[in-house]
Length: 266
Image (tube, rainbow, N blue to C red; front, top):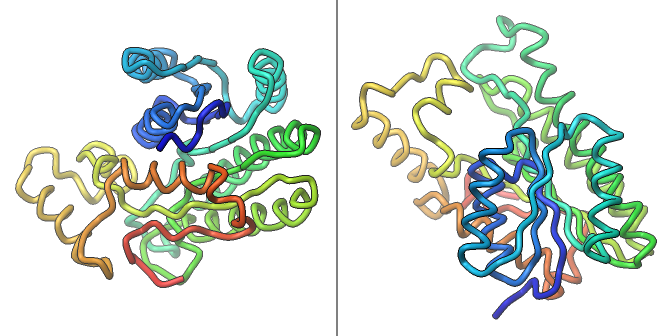
């Protein structure tokens, strides 16, 4: 069943692991995907995969923090495609882990909060303006769900998730009367995103590039931490996003969708 037939979806961070994986699933469900991000090479690689499989994909190079660029690009997309049906933001925020709050630099604490809410506000508001006019649309953002409870050595991730979740709920309340839905998708520790170099970029204390066995053990332990005893795969997360962005998800808005495999309750 193709859940997103004839839908137009813009994906910010579309050249990354999560954005690209989600774009491939959306395209497989019939959506035309607009891949937005700063790096043309990675965006074009995802687009080639999609078109090679018979899907439709367009590339747009922009900085999601540039409000004018986002607004101009979305207007151009809407004019070219006829509508903007889905907007998904998975742009990295620059989170820093592995340092206590008492030792964490202020800029490292604030970075994910400021970058996260700025990119979310800019992309969601721009999409909402078009969706309100057309009387339909779905706005999705993805985070780790860290706002559900306290955690140690996770820097500004919890506050960043919290402000994004609350913004999305408030937006959903305002635009619901116009047929527009908005929600967060919680996905923590997706194995495909956890290459040794990516882990080291977030937490400098975890450098397992020279120890593949230790890296695999870490991934296995993350799976055992979850209520289901396993980590969700990227394609499963993307299918969840496709379902809630589709007409089958029509009753759902103003909430967070827990797709962590039971990293936490809620």
